[in-house]
Image (cartoon, rainbow, N blue to C red; front, side, top):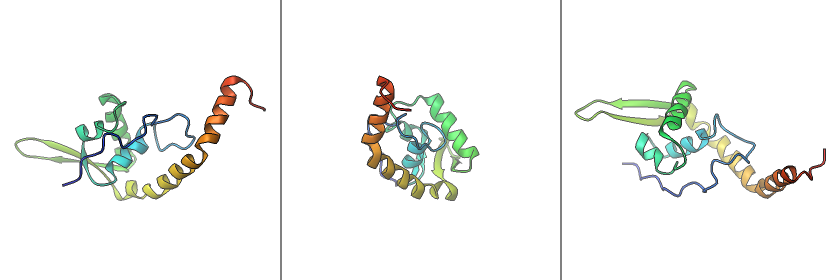
Length: 125
């Protein structure tokens, strides 16, 4: 059995429009992180992804599936169960994501300063 996802696994500002590095769409990187430890049901993914609507989560999962990064498994039985999991291709993104996340953490203050400079009109061009 896979450990339940931590409802607080993402910073409240995630996903941030501040990060210049994005994987697919606004939510894809966080979905991939949720699937890192193993397959999850739709309802499990909604726990740490508090700001996502069911419609957007469905769209993001379908797009990740079309890209070959996520697989969808339907378990037949008295109660039909659907799980989403990373494919080998999706799992291969974890290393590059680690690098991108580290870069963003390292440059967060610079990114904030740059964004604030543009917002206040003090940016030099």
